[in-house]
Amino acid sequence: MTDRLPPLTALRAFEAAARHMSFAKAAEELNVTPAALSFQIKSLEEHLGTPVFRRLNRAVALTEAGETLAPGCSEGFHQLAAAWGATRRLQDTKILTVTAGPAFTAKWMAPRLYEFAQLHPDIELRFSASLRRMDFERDQIDVAIRFGVETDTGLFSLPLADEWVVPVMTPKLAADFPTIESLKDAVLIVDQSIDFLKPACDWDAWFKIAGVSPVEAHGPRFSQADHAVDAALAGVGVTLGRRALVIKYLMEGQLVAPFQPALNTGARFRFLCRDGMQDKPQIRLFREWMLREIDKGRPVADQMTIVNPNP
Image (tube, rainbow, N blue to C red; front, side, top):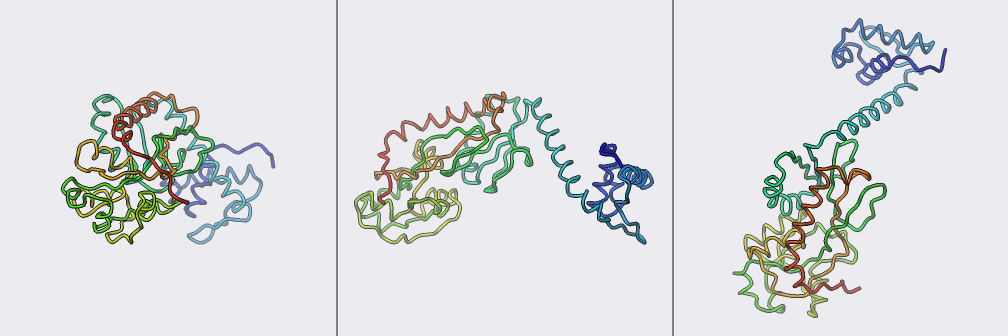
């Protein structure tokens, strides 16, 4: 027995056969004949000096040696594939894969993407709208837009604009509720997507900083922020709109924010990518475009009086 590794083809044949527990299925996956796959595994066993499979009647089972080898072998090929994919993506300047939450994708990204596509027709954008925290290597993600207060270790992390919430409604509905006191009688839409923030950024917290006794919210509750915004756009009621998700509607007059102050969430969206990749052409161009788009909302944001929640 030697410490020298067996041929990569033999290890690949073993990994596939151990994963499928079938020589026939492994051979099909690797596009070789069962006889060729069997030969590779036999070569590995000779190299190791002990069997890795017990050949049963129409089945195979791992030996103790095979059970020891299989996990590391599988992880090794996974890491090799990830490294190969990452290296290939270094050469790719045409595709940009972005992940963000469904609300941010629907209310910030989607309405603005036409302009980016016009500016950079050579870049193919691919989006994954998910609340799942995707892995840059495993999921082959170039950019992630994440919301919260946590820090991002080992990544290039650019905090975007401060995030606040403020009551927003249609202009028609605003005419029916001219004062903060009257707002208590409105349908108060609840966005539960930020319930995790501490201190809370809910209707109770907003009424307190506005100097008015809180009232129990009496309206629909949504687990997704974009659904709450859609309800406000439809005139269902008033919601505490998050800056990133409502500022375009405020700029265009589809929604209004007649009452101050705005409640500081203490959280931000962050632009994330793997450290060292921030100057890759399509990542840099996308980041610069996002910052320009955020800056377009500055005149509206500057009108807000941002106040921290009361303890």
